[in-house]
Amino acid sequence: MLLSDVLPSAPTTTADALALFDAAPAVAAESMIGTWRGAEMPTQHPLDGFLAASGWWGKQFIDAEKVHPLLFPAGNGTSLWALNPILAFSGLGVAAKLPRATKLPLGKPIAALRPALQTHAPKARLRTTRYRGTDTATMIYDQLPINDVFRRLSDDAVIGAMDLRGSSRPYFFVLRRDDSLPVV
Image 1 (cartoon, rainbow, N blue to C red):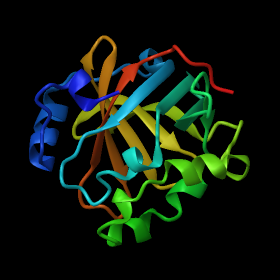
Image 2 (tube, rainbow, N blue to C red):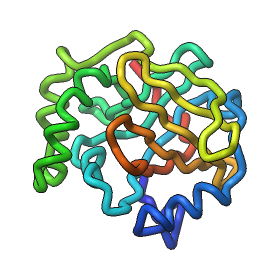
Image 3 (cartoon, one colour):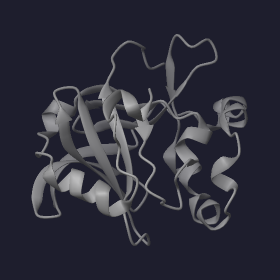
């Protein structure tokens, strides 16, 4: 999915993205149930490009207790697999400090390491939390100090603000509902 599929004139700065986020209505946690295709929203954040370079496809919310935050396409393109985020994000601190790290093509190495990176266990939960003065759906990682907070863009699209401990500003992405591929 391209960001332009959801936002033809996407914000390009954190301030613009926050203005869009703050103006969007809250999301009921139960409305997030399903599989969502993702796209990054570049705002000059140090992590811009990381998810795209990794080959990230999106997220799956099975119910409030079972969430797969990082889905990747299987080699044949007819299914998705869940990556254990503790393995993916353990190197984020280093990646954020290396200017070109987010530009490296990581999709093939991640696919090759699938046997070691894949998980069938959920690695996040879905709750309603208060963020920037609004109670809204939030995905809370089980093993990482990260919350992905959502606001509604349309009936089938949300904007996400990744609230990452140690980052002075959120990292933005969009999700569009897409239940077309099974998660294996």
